[in-house]
View 1 (tube, helix red, strand yellow):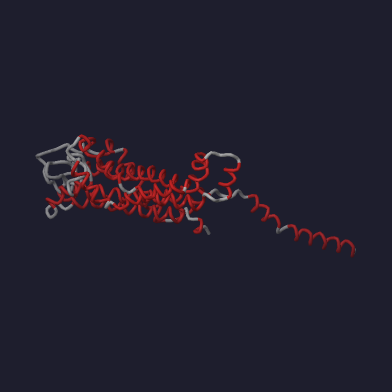
View 2 (tube, rainbow, N blue to C red):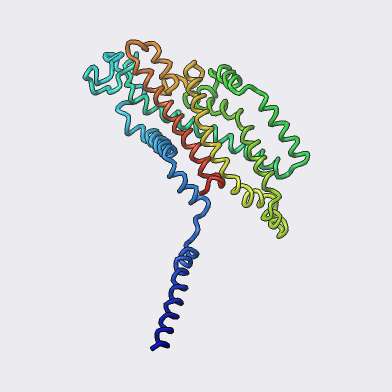
Length: 324
C-alpha cells in the first residue's frame, strides 16, 4: 500500500512538472508577424490614423466616381438660378449646396474638384520620391566624388525659394502651350515637381549611409551581387518605411500649394473645377452666400488633416522602437 501511494505521488509530481511546459510549446509554435503585418496592426490601433485613412479613401472614391456622383457637369450653367442659397434654406433640392455667380451647382464642382486636389497631391510627390530617391540612393551608395557632386546639386536646388519659383513659372508659362494643357494641370505638375525633391534625396542618402555597411550588404557583395542588385533588392526595401512617411506628409503640402496658386489666379485655369479657384470665386459672395467659400475650404482642411493624421500613424507604426 505504501509503495502504491509513493508511486501515485511520483506520477503526480511528474504530471505537475510536465503540465506547465505545454503553454510554452504553443507559444514557440506561434508564427511571428512580419514587419509590415505588425506595422499594419499598430496602424489600425491608432484611432486618429484610422480616421485619416477613412477620409482619404472617401475623397479618393469621390474623385474616381465623380462622373457618376456629381448631379451636373462642373461647368453646366443655369442662368435662371444664379447665387441660389443651400437647399435647406431655399427649398430647391436640385442644388443642395446652392449655385455660384453663373448658375453652376456647387456640390457638383466640389465633387469634380476632388479629382484635381487628389491628383495634384499624388503626382508631384511621386516625382519627388522618384527623382530624389534615385539621387539619394546613388549618392549614398557610391560615396566619394559622386556623393559630393550630387549633394552640391541638391544644395543648389535647395537654395531656391520653392514657392517663389512655382509662382514665377505659373505666371510665365500660363499662356503657353504647357499652361493650356489639361486646364493648367500639366503646368502645375511641372512647377511643383521641379522643387521639393531635394528633401527626399537627403532622406534617402542618410538612410543608405546608415545601412550600406551592414552585414547582409557585405554578404551580398561577397557572393558577387552587382551594385544595381544590392541597391534594388537589399537597400531599397529596407528604407521604404521613412519614404512612405515622407509621402504621407508631402501630399498635404502639394494640395495646399495648388489651392493657394488657384486662389491667386495662377493655378488651374477656369472653368475647370478646383477647390482653390472655388474659394476665389466664393469671395464675391462671402456675406450673402458663405457656403460658396466654406464648402471648398472645409474640403481642403479635411484632406490636409487626414493626411497629417495618417502620416503620424505611419511614423509610429513603422518605427521599430514603438513596438511593445
